[in-house]
Length: 490
Image: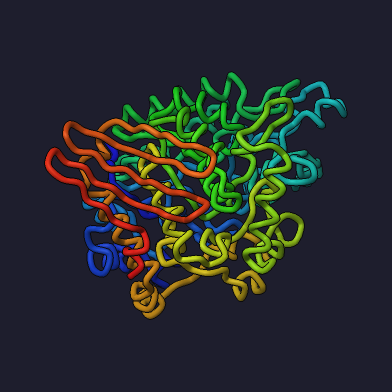
């Protein structure tokens, strides 16, 4: 069972400039007793593909430049350890796909990969193509000519270097079984089901989060549970979908929370935030920032379904992020760079808030007091600003928030008041027993109160968005302790 303590999200190489052992040393040294678990972002071979490890050539191998499976085991002995099961796709550079390129349909691995013909054997109509839900512009198919002289249209949901897996086929099932088994043998106890919403494709549907997808997630989750691992579904979608997914897996991400917190801080209006916290899944992970961009669609309308925020509020949210970041986020978002997703804004959360130390701590306090287990991304831990140099070098929008750090940068960052304040908040979240109790939320238009109670102990966070008065109040049977968020910055 995952510890109810703050977790770190990080790449092994980008946080230390080295590898898994260096990350372990950081967690057992300067960051000792800060985190209960680690989401170790793709450490597979290679870590530096076209999508920073999310396009594995060999999903069952650790990139030898950063360590070994023994290093993964050692890390998992001391921390909850989460790894990504990349459900939807594999690299076009994988030995399996190279064999397909060489042998076409005669390849032993032909059935591992999904083609248009697999889903639309009688051909696809224009209407059917328009119905497919897309995370990026353009077609979801890439025509590729094999050495047999035939050209086949392979399903490539994200990029043409990420070939979709046929998860229903025997080779597809065996491929994912092998990775799950490798995880279970090496102290990985939590599985993040990456891009799982796209895994099942059916003709005549939008090929995203179908009833069959829910059934598939049920089976995959049960399989992981049988191996002693919990599952987390990683799905960006309408907020009602998240509520439904939460019923089918061990945990789900609360991706609606990050944009709602920004909206509250930008408009001094907490109505949407309070509305969501009253109905949000309790079996969730909370984030503000991740290795991807800041999700927007999770709080907005989708088709005929109204959102927690309306279209005008979403537009204002995005434009305010751009303004707060001095338009740096605009350079990294949408068609401005080589982006996979158009429904996310690429920017550090710190810069999205105009690099305001106080507002950033308010955002973290709301996250930590919201239902779920909080995760803090490594760049957010150190309140990093947008990495425009890396963005210019790579022209990959997400790199604006995927910096390469080293020991000197970490040492300097740990001395910053905002980072010291964040570490104090993490300590409160990790140690107060009330967070193991019952949650409640109250509020009016301009303020809200997030409260936890267990037996005679209670803790609450009160924020007035208009006046920016923010207090943490601890209650016991005999006393009341008030801590101003401003005091944490002192």
